[in-house]
Structures are given as structure tokens and as C-alpha cells.
Image 1 (cartoon, rainbow, N blue to C red):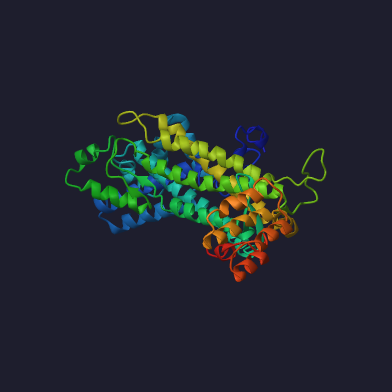
Image 2: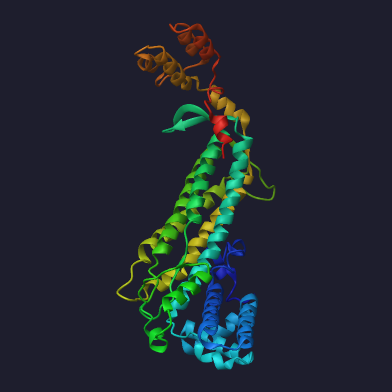
Length: 454
């Protein structure tokens, strides 16, 4: 390892402290991935032109397709470095790809096709499609991570469906729920956000310098260029953008970023709630003997995974907001203010991915503290006031709420106090008996049933 690439000297923690956690993402969104995407797009366009316009010899077409398949499947870091070396001279990243591909055509005895590399394209035709390919790959990666989180929460919901837990509304003791039901609430929201993010397509355009196929028509006026463009863009798995300026408008990336932010926001909320449940003692965390929770307090096992997740999700959402607000705004037919922003999409995705990993790790450490959960419920008999006053209302007692308010609001109510109140009610005996048998731990409504509904 040289001093230049030592992670201790990295400015971004994604490339420093968290370098090893980005192994899966690095091939999907990096300078290497962008160059590889450009190569894939240039080759795809060349093959399409060869098929429709240039090559009448089936052997040459087959040879070109074989070359394209070989490069796409075996594109290496050394290949990317060779392109960067060309860029050092051209000072233009996309032109460097064009020159490198021309060299590959020469080596494959297809040099007569050099003139058709990057034919009628502007750099943005190549870049927007390369970014679209990368976004699709990263979307699938993040969706897979989110699915892992959902599966873990789904398991927790089912396993703890009947474990009573005191609710807190406004921070105050409220009608009991179950630990599993609260896990199901998170899982359900995550499932919906996952579906919404999954529905976000990535757009692409291939229509020349200002979106009008000017050069295309000048060379081949009889060709249906919009049809050919659509065929090409959709072959990459992208949604064809029929109308654009020099750049694809990025409205799709804006929507994509918003959808990712929505998913992340669900997980921020989950991180904070689970952190609080750990603080309340509802969950215990498994610990590793070699790890240190505090530099001065040996007893501590801090909920660092949920804190790490919350922080990284916040960074990701700040970037997502900027992507969504900035990228769809461009001066006239083109300015370059989107270029640097686009290069930071990987940072947004990286912090999201880092957070998902932390959350999954944290969830796997948790075990319900059933003793503490029961103690919390048993210490708050006042939460049954809701049940009592509702039964009173059902029996036509008009001031039921006021009666219970006078007895319970702001007061410590124990089992005997509440049962004495119930004993004095003028309600049918079977209903009175049901209320007397009720405890905070059994006043759960349909919580257990709902916890198991995925």
C-alpha cells in the first residue's frame, strides 16, 4: 500500500474508515464503474449502428458483437487505467473512451469501424446512459439490503407478536401494544417504501447535441432516428426520454432520490425508536468480549449501530434532497453544474448502504427483555382507564371519560384502586367481570394478530 492510497489519508470516511464496508458498492458506482458504463454504451450504440446501417456482412457483425461481449464481460481495472492514461492527453473523459475503443477495433481487425464509434453522439448521450446503468445496479443493491432488513423485522414481529409492551404517546404511558406489533409497524412501512423505490425507473436519452438528432439527420435523413434511439435506450434497461435538451432532464433521478429518501426516513424513525427501546431496557444487546463500549465505563454496551445508521441516513438524505432539487435545473440547453453533483450520487448511495448494514447488524444483536417489559406494564394500571371508560360509554354512562379522568389523570393508580372503581360501576355483571380480569399485559386488542399480518 502506497501513502497515496492509504485509507488513513482519505477525506471521505467511505474511502477511509468504512472502506471495507463499501466492497459490494465500489464496482457499481465509482470512477471505474462510470468508465465501464461509458464503454458499454459506446459499444451498444456501435453494434446497433452496425446492425441497422453499416454492416451487411453477417460475419463482421458477429465479430463485432463478439468483441463487444468480450469487452463488457472482461472489462478490467487495467482497461480503465488505460483509458485514464488517454484522458491525461485528451483532457476529455468520453473522448478517451472513444479512442480506446478505436484501438480495440484495430486489434480485432475491425478498424474500418473506427469512424462509427461515438457516431452522431454528444458526450451527454454516453454519460446519461452510463449513469442510468449504474443507478439501476445500485438500486438493485439497495433494494436487496432493504429486503434483508425487512426479513429481520418480519422475523422479530412474528417471534414477539404476543410479548406485551407499554406504549408511549407524547412520552407518557399509553395503551399497551406488543413488541412484535411495533416491529411489524416498521416492517410494513419499510415494505411500502421498498415498493415505491422499486417502482422508480431510470431514464435515458440518445438524441444528439441539443436533443433534435441534428447530426443524425444530416448523415442519414431517411432513418427513423427516434425509433432507433428508443430501441437502444430500452435495450439498456432504461426508460426512453423522447424529449430533451443536450442533457437528460434528471427529473427521473430527482424522483429516484426522493424515493430513496422516503425509504431512509422510515429507517431513521426506526433507528430512533429502537434506540429508545434499548435505553428503556425493552431490548438487551449481545456484546463481544473484545469490544469496548466506553473508554471509562466498563459496563456499557452502547446502541452504536442504530446511532451510526441514523447519522449516515441523515447524510444520505441531505444529499438526496440536493440531488432532487438541483439536478432537474439546468441553464438553457446545457450547463455543467450537474456534472459534479452526479459524481456524488455514489456518496448518497454509499451512506445509505452503510446505514443499512449497521441497522442489520444492530437488529441481529437484539433480544427482548421480557422481565423488564412485564414490569413496565404492571407498573401502569392507569392505562386500563381507556378500556373502562369505553365499556362505560357502551352502557350509556355519559360522563364516563370525566369519571376516569378524575381518578387517573396525573395519579399513580394501582391494581386495587382500579378494581375498586370497577366494582362500583353500574354495568352488566359479565362486562364487569371481564374488566376485573383485565391487566395491562392482557389489554392488547388485536396487537398479536396484527403483528403476524405481513
